[in-house]
Length: 216
Ligand code: G3P
Image 1 (cartoon, helix red, strand yellow):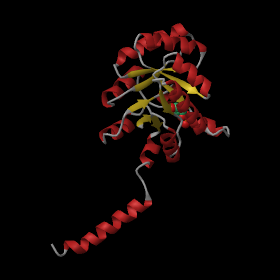
Image 2 (cartoon, rainbow, N blue to C red):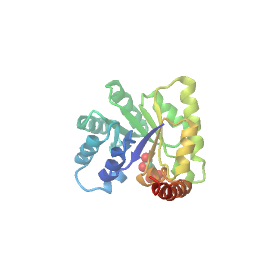
Image 3 (cartoon, rainbow, N blue to C red):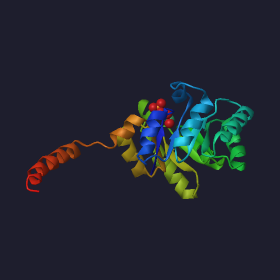
Image 4 (cartoon, rainbow, N blue to C red):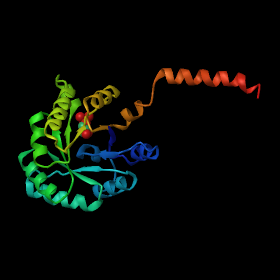
């Protein structure tokens, strides 16, 4: 499973990229609104440090506007993926961009039918938002399982990008469900490293090594 960071913060992205563990980045208007600087500069800077897809979202709600924005975004860098909301107008834009070989990610997916339609429109990625389903007492991960099964049945090439992940258990479950990608806030990415038994074990090894050291 590929791991993306769900952030527009360059420092967060640099840290994980420097470890060689970053496969891509997702942004959205909310995440970009937390950063300083011009939208396109933010994206350009992110593209310079990320060795994979960088998702940038359109804000138009009509097909024509989405296509105009999508073309502008795609010009920023070859790694840009145009994020399009799951609407009727959005899927028309996805079909057109996909015919031009511009990669797209259909976002705000909350049902398997929405994912099926997006895949049929030629989306490169679909983004089911798990945490937001959990928030309203649905099991978000069931949606990922359903989408993965449907895409497998019909051999769609569209990748399943599990989004709105809020904790390390979400990542394990998304991996078990067969999601192609998980996109994580930096804090959750960091939590993946930790286990108290690792810390205790390392402390003990180092203490014991002190005794061995005296014999060297
Ligand atoms: O990738 C989508 C993500 O940014 C949404 O996350 O936590 O706002 O539901 P959240």
